Image (cartoon, rainbow, N blue to C red; front, side, top):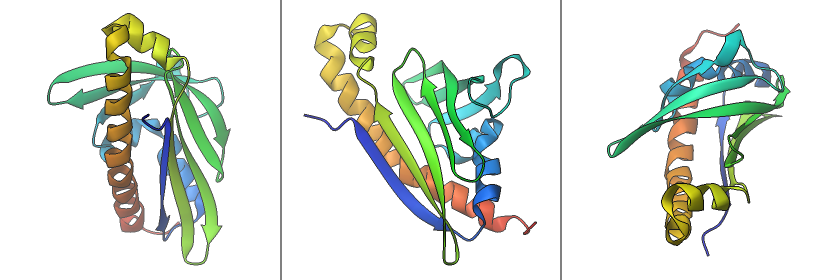
Length: 158
């Protein structure tokens, strides 16, 4: 059975609050993610619990948009959102360490995703869709973290 969670971490030579600000500015996610091309706040929202944003994802075979809700917005500690309708939870945690911050990106396929996938793609496609999403998280998280590290360490200290 395919795992429903995955996470990875990187140490970045910046303080937690600066990394939080970079990641909580979801309009920059297209700079970091290999799949998410762009994000924008809905209705002029911002990084707070309950705020919504839309993301445009691009793969060679398809482009799609998702609407997400921020579920954690604790400056310098955690930023996370749920992709609707309760398909997945993406999040970042920030831990001060010697030399900077350990940033952990995590992905969790929520239980409700199975019903969503069955409705969209058919019951026979649920396991395949689940496996595809897991593989994208496994390959995409290290790429995203590496891009965040490059961008953060290239900025001038505040």
